[in-house]
Length: 345
Image (cartoon, rainbow, N blue to C red; front, side, top):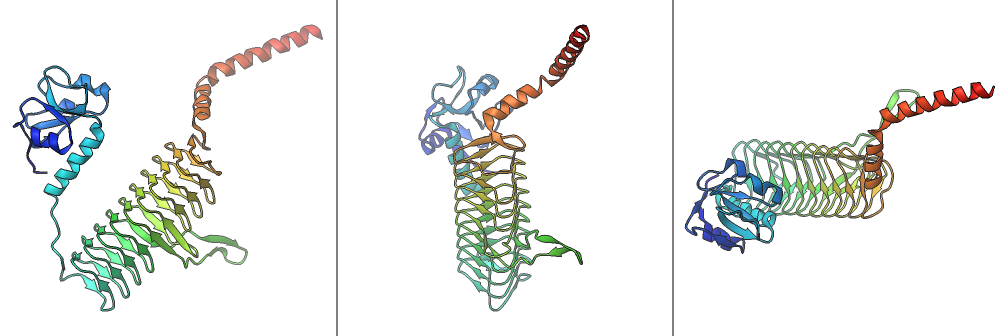
């Protein structure tokens, strides 16, 4: 990361108001406890203001600037930081000049759009269609009859199996696998376990981002669907015929079983999961490590295993903490009842 911008110019970039030396040159972003000259500290939670060193340069909310510090005040520090990071990314990111590396293998019947970069050891199979301005970093494998929209980025190790469709402006991080066979098996009296053929596909909408090592199965028949603007973290598994609605967020190690449906704008926190055929309504939040086994109404916030209404689950968890004392009380009560029975007898 190499950049430099004055405090005054940075303030203008985020529509903030600055205090201190406007010519102060910023070339780093750090935590409050790591402040050094030439850095700026982003603060969007007031509880961290107490960790700020005197003389620090801050990006913070209006009215939060401690005495002895300078910097930029804005209404939304988190949003301002995002704008700064986008600016720095544009300055520092190395663009890939269009071209095809000599080690890349491209079938003569594949269609490559304009201004596409195909990196070392990529393989693009028969009938594949790659849109304009795409970047294939290296060691990417694209199967037959795959369609990839414009302005997509594929990092090393990405695999697209045959027949899948990818929208525009999508990002696939290293080793994401899209369109492999779903986990389809059934008991069979003669052979033990019978494999169910998986003949469907995967359709991914525009502006989707998929993390490292994430795997999305193709449908048994029909489509596994990932909606527009969905953001999927690393190590997520999405089963065959699942549907993920537009603008949903799936955090690391989420598991989505086959034929389940996740609505629009749903957040599934880390290590949560949903059972096959269950439906999570629009706008729901599923807390970390929760297990959804039945349909969840739209707008719900659930947690626990099995997942239930979050406030109820909190009460259950609090009650579990009192079980040892409750057990003692019950044992004492049983003894008292027995003594009373003996006296009555």
